[in-house]
Image (cartoon, rainbow, N blue to C red; front, side, top):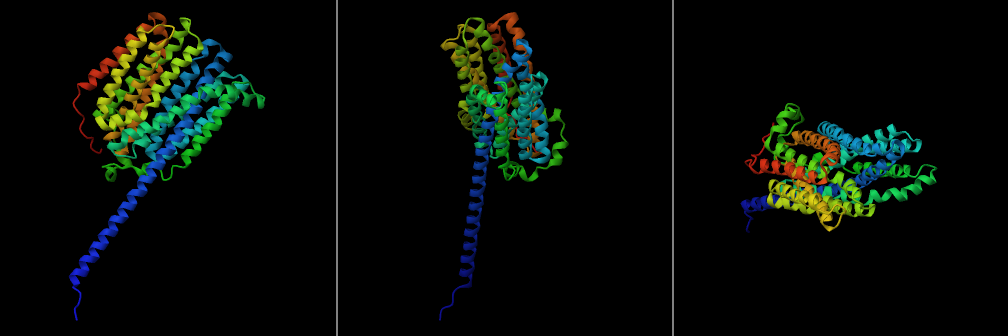
Length: 437
């Protein structure tokens, strides 16, 4: 009688166990990938709805402020929202570090609900101060939408990080298209409630911010728990508090991202803000302004996935430099285009948006790249505070510059503002990986 070899049985059992372990590991990876995909889709939806509400408020807020306080007040709601965004990104990033990404997004979107409701009451009662407080809170909701791109990027390692950021940013395309077009139909909602027509946009925005908040409830588990990062096992909350902001901003990857994001924002805002005034000063109608701005918004958001793929394929720094090059071309074209509009100005504003998008997506990916998880939210918040503060300054400074020197001078200043940082980034050596703090 032949007895089976005990060694053969043991080897077979080991192979069976190994196959079982591989199957379990594949199953875990599949579940994690499914969770990441679901999370990105939720972020995309939340950003889209949030942007729709925010841009609708910006559009209606400008008109409402002019009605209540006169034309000189028309730009104040936009400035209030930018200040709110600058405050929000810092506050919500700190909350992300302490409590996680999900509570930060929920808080930002909830502030949008409160802000839109306050603005609706302010417009209905004719209280300008209440409108401005509402716009300040809406800026905090916009900050949550801005930080959502980092939440998406954190889910993946560098080979897929930039394209994921691009997909989340792409969600804002929905808001850019729908937001301004909600003001007119929302007037009917206001009339049905017995309110002044412009209050309708804020009522609708209140509901949309609430929907964005509901999407954030679906982010389970917290995206912070899904992070796939080489230093994940060594990250800790305590290490984040031991690093000063100045030291954090001096790290090569962070400082490069700061230069990229700030430059792109300042150049884009400087030209974008003054283009409608420039067109109207030279006889262009609202339809020309609308068409030129549609091209600009298309450039800002529609190609975000492409920007992400380029950054993943060629690296963040080359794509940032390509964005600066496109911004320089856009500035030159805008300065030389016919003042009444025309194809050249349309192309210039499209390229202005696309150049911003290239630098914005690639710079965001660079900022998320090498930092340990414990430091990442702090760095992102600190950089975005500077970016949005610079954006507010650029918006305010562009008006006097237009009055004193003209629209062509804006283009010339924009060329210098884009060229100098491009040289700075191009001449820096490649950043080494950032070690854990």
